Length: 429
Image 1 (cartoon, rainbow, N blue to C red):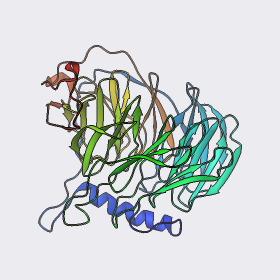
Image 2: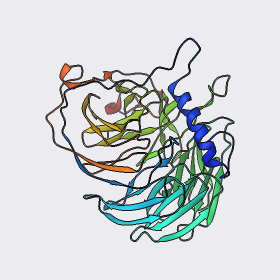
Image 3: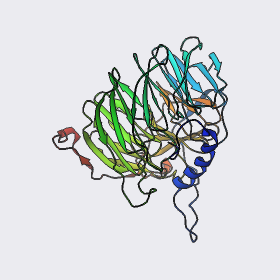
Image 4: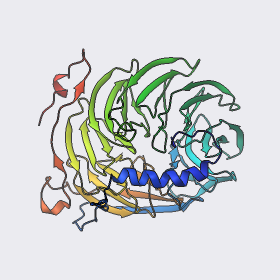
């Protein structure tokens, strides 16, 4: 969320000012005697993975660093993308050819959300716009009264929208009519952004700027559970920033979440009970596979945690202060993009750098993996599809051939009473 001021009025002007503030904040504090450390320089390495550029396409974008929540989504056959210039497009996954393009003439800032025959986007002027998934025809357009900086979540019976003024809204997918709302108090100072909600069954789950995660019944808007992932700490408002500005991720009975100056945590989807948490700071987010959770930290590190316990497995620090996107697990690799448009490919098992590709300009939003393909949308609206080839096994971590190696390690986590790790989950070095 963008400071203490809510509502669409002046959103674009505030955006530029807050972008500059956020950039200074996230790079770290500086004093008169010491300048802010520059981004890490990329070093040469011997690539052990070949990555092909399959195709590229473009939607109207925006050069300014506004931290917009514009990322791709898919229905398994098409890719849906939106640009800050107002264009929404459906593209063929394999070729990038356009199935349809819609021009909204609106300053798009959150999207795309897709599902149930709809593609939904939000604007910095406080509008939510829905399109027919098959044809691109506009279905409805409604005002929600607050800037939308995260993709809406689209379910069978509800469209869930998170606005920067701390509201979670449930909209009717047929006409956009508001069916319920939940409001959370926003701190006087917060980062620019809002967490993308997720839908699981009859629950909508979202993180908020106050460090809390809420689960809402999508039928009636009642709060089912509330969990504080990170309570505010410190004397100053800067120290007390605990925004959850990244997407909540749900897998079966587990909810994964990470916050700024806070913790990464796994919660129970039915009750909100915290199974484990670990001190980590992130405003970009995380991804996971069957065994591991991957986090891009605010400092530009990529950290791998054991999924069932939160124990740290490895940490890659070659990209410090490079403004990383959230990581994306694709095949046997983890991909993460940076402020110069480079996409870094890491070995899942070791964290070693195995390939580097270029997507275009700055990438703020998480790449999307569909099958063996990775789709990366930069902030200027260029979409690039990559396909990693089968590669020989990566060398052991720490050897010279692998390029920047990750450090391995374990650490303590805090777990909830009443759930001891299963024997196969027990922490080990």
